[in-house]
Image 1 (tube, rainbow, N blue to C red):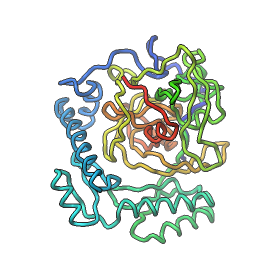
Image 2 (tube, rainbow, N blue to C red; image 1 turned 120 degrees about the vertical axis):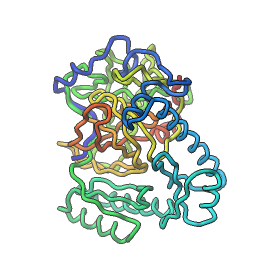
Image 3 (spheres, rainbow, N blue to C red; image 1 turned 180 degrees about the vertical axis):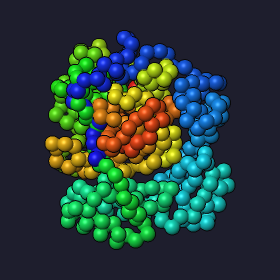
Length: 399
């Protein structure tokens, strides 16, 4: 089942999530940001990446350097007309899907890998948009999610059952696009991240909790919290460590309606949302330097009040999900990121980061996710941070 990652109070998790006093972020840890060898990256991120890949810290830092360098090259190519939407990392090399030999030569001359693809990024985006429109007409609750997979060069549709007429109509629509669409069986459902635990968890509202996200400021300089929209659906008062610190002011998420999972809360005077991401005992806090979007295949980590610090890779953007939360009408949520980093209920709204660039806010994941340490694998969804900042006209707080 797919579910949002906010939580109602249920007990043991709350006690286990208490961190040392003095943390500013609602689920951060204390401690200064610690750079990796050469000062390029936080040491704990380099160690985590090295451990997950079975390589040395130095090799992990070189891998991050390589990803950053290749992303800069791709940005340069974009100015000359190369479409970056079909780019993805494959075994450390940034590969760009192109549809003609001339563009392939340009990409390869710049030092990246070019792949002649059957479908352009624009074509696949159009197919995905058509499926979104079909879902908005009648929600296919048996369809878990769908989005463009640049590695497969297809729109991938994941199905849990075909019990309703809407499910079958949606799949017939998907099949009409032929080789541009792949349909896969899938277990479980996607659900947004509002969970249930005892009061006293990291960011409480009523008898639910989420996780503190990123701080930003609006055009007037007012401080706001950028969070998952479902965490502030009813514009609640928000509490950190028992004290009021913010109040929901706007959201684009509404159960039973087509939604985007982003929202804002006004931050109380005298309260600061630190420009750092807590790692839950996996090293010091990570300083946030910006919000540049990382390509598909990039390494990414997230911090959440329930599962703590978990890492994986980005699998897709512009992903659509049908959330089926217990006691709520099914909800279509679009424009999400897809990852195999593990998340759990109560992680909603928490920050995602790649290197020192903020990537997003936890939205939801499969109900059968079983996070087992930093590298426990799962299926999770996040609201891209850059989209939220752009939509609300905000400037991210950076270190």
